[in-house]
Length: 146
Image 1 (cartoon, one colour):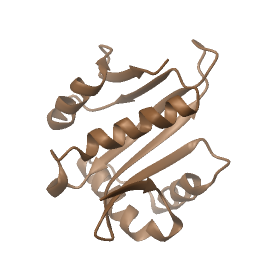
Image 2: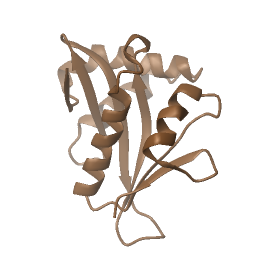
Image 3: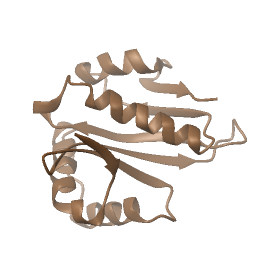
Image 4: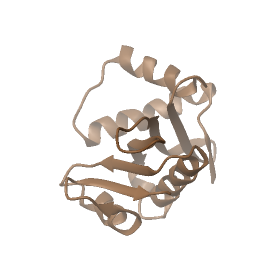
């Protein structure tokens, strides 16, 4: 298994994961937005990033994250926007590795916090999040980096 940055040639595999994520949250994002998102994830001038987990030539997990300014700190925050691992690969530590990779990227970019939201019924995800971050009381998970 390999953890790496998203590449243009990943579109078809990424799209399968992206669709699985949407199905999990019962949303349907328009194709035009999906294509724009993919382009932004590859654009080095964007603050939107993506890491993927690959196994045997297939993507099995992804994480999208965004660096942004905060009114509470001089440096940036990092919003972990989307995290998805295919159902057959869950509970194998892939989600944790993706989150920890975002922590590392945030630290390297002088962010003081990584945070994310999840639905209250995402019990499997929340069991992981409770181990790797602090529940701020708003179903918002965050990890102070600095």
